[in-house]
Structure formats: C-alpha cells, structure tokens
Amino acid sequence: MPLYRDEAIVLRTHKLGEADRIITLLTRHHGRVRAVARGVRRTSSRWGSRLEPFTHVDLMIAEGRTLDVITQAETLTPFSGELGGDYERYTAGTAMLETAERLVVEDKEPATQQFLLLVGGLRAMAGKELPAGQVLDSFLLRSLSVAGYAPSFDHCARCGDPGPHRWLNPSAGGVLCSDCRLPGSATPSAETVAVLGALLAGDWAHVRAAEPRHLKEASGVVAAYLAWHVERGLRSLAYVER
Image (cartoon, rainbow, N blue to C red; front, side, top):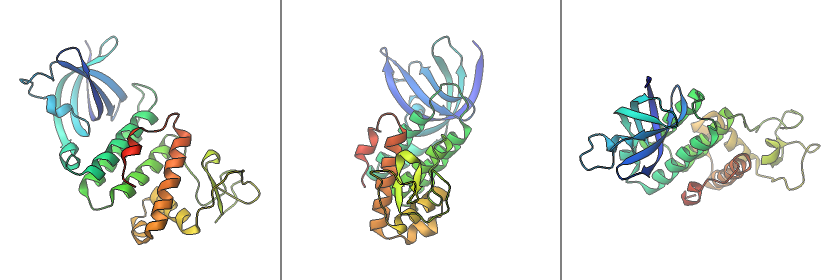
C-alpha cells in the first residue's frame, strides 16, 4: 500500500474490534484523516499512548481502501499531559478539538490553516499564561473565520457601513447598523464588541484589560455565533466552565 508521512493532532479515538482503534486526525497536509491503529489497545503496545486525543504526532500512514492504517507514530508534543490535570483547560481543549473536526468537513482535503491554528491554540492552552476561556473564544472566532464564516465587529455585516454599531446578529455575520438590523438582534455593550474584535485579532493587551462582565458577554456572543454556523451544537461546549 502507498505510504505517506504527515504530522497531526489526534482529535478523537474509538474502539475497533478487540485490540484496534480508529483514530480521527487533523493533519498538516492531508486535512482530516481517519485511520486504524492496529493493536494499540493491547498492554504490550509500545505506541498506543502516542495516539491519545490532544497529542501532536509525526505519523507514517499506509493508504487503504476504506480506512488508512497507521504504521508508525512519534510524539512531537504531548499536550494531553499539560491539560489532563486541569479540568477547565481540558474541557476547553476538548471543545477546540471538536470544533476543528466539525469545521473541516471533507476528509483528505488540505486544511493547513486550521491545523496550524489548532496547534497554536493548544500550545497557548497548555502554556497557562492566558485564561482558558479567552483562549477558547479566540480560537473559535479564528477557526470560524478560516472556515469562511468570518464575523464583522467593526463594519456592518450587511452593507459595510463603518461602525461602531449597536446591533449584533449571528445569522447576519456580525454587527449591524440601524438600517440593516434584524428582528431579534442582540445589543451588546460597545466594550463587549471591542473585546470580540480583540479576541479575533489576538490583541491580548486589550483582552487582559477588559472587565469580567464584558468578557462573559463576549463568550455568550461567541457561543451563539458558533451555534448558528455549526449544524449541530458542540457537545463538549456544555462542559466548559464559563
């Protein structure tokens, strides 16, 4: 069988037969890949621990008719070790993995930007220099942008009129001017909209200076925006401490 080599983040796993697992991966060059890892559930397996969720790995993979087969795995960064003992960061990281899997919709289609974004997000989450919720919100906004759902927080999402604007509607793609506002639009504070723009741009100085109430309101907007653009809500997001 033809072989290829790639680096990947393990997104999730599930059992196959008595000793195997199916591993869902986000790879740097091949996008989302589902591959079988033979014998990794046996106690004698030397590399089963390298194929756990959150692990950044270098892989050798054989192409198969239905599922590819992992033939070699080397750990690059064991993010699971940094996140496993911290419930808040673990649950936020799980939401990141699920988001990446859901937004990369086609198997074997290159998704390099999403891969690099996920690696950077997990590195920031494991580094513990930034609050977990803010890292997650920033990742979600950027991941949606890479997938083609970029929100607008400084111009009207419908007519492009420069802001600031008072209204915000996830279905419209961001903030709306008074002429374009839709029924049911939210009216977040101007400070909250500024925080959302900072999270999207990675302006951490602005995010750090924001008041907790504006950060909390921004998190609600991010969750609503994600729910609108993802067909089914993220199961993992329900466990994230907000």
